[in-house]
Amino acid sequence: MNRQKSKNKWNDHYSQKAKKENYPARSVFKLQEIQEKFRLMKKGDRILDLGCSPGSWLLYAAEVAGKSGEVVGIDIKDVSINVPPNVKIHKEDIFSDDDEFSLSIGAGYNVILSDMAPDTTGNKFVDTARSYALCEQALEYSKERLAPGGSFVCKIFQGEDFKAFSESVRSSFKKHKIYKPKSSRKASKEIFIIGIGKR
Image 1 (cartoon, rainbow, N blue to C red):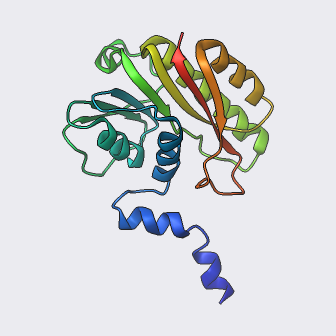
Image 2: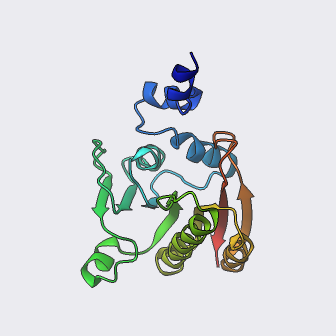
């Protein structure tokens, strides 16, 4: 009995709901909660999804943006799901300095999303430092590629760099929010920092 319970410890209500609604991961409900609360995305938007694998955020963003919108995803890992015509995926490292890749991504996005997380080591200091490095790069993307007035959503692991990153977002946007969705696992150190209205 205990062995069965342990085997299914990640198979919670949100995991089952994601499967039922044809999303590859439960993380879709985090973005859904953020969207319902802050209304950052709208029809016709251009949206950039950093760390887009396995593709749940891509699919949800594509639904919100609609046929007149465009969603571009970047991930170092493969995205194997079928995506609608308004979605483009680039398999690339976000730290890449390749000029051709940079040009193909373009700029003028209305929303930039980052659900990026490092491969965890179990060492909280290493993991939070790696999370911070990804967040800093995501913020750089927002500075370079987000249209004025645009919005930014970024997941970060809470650690000693959290406050510094939060302040960096605050200084770049007119409004700044810190939010933990109900669908985040209680044991998770993740939290989302949201910038609204790029300066």
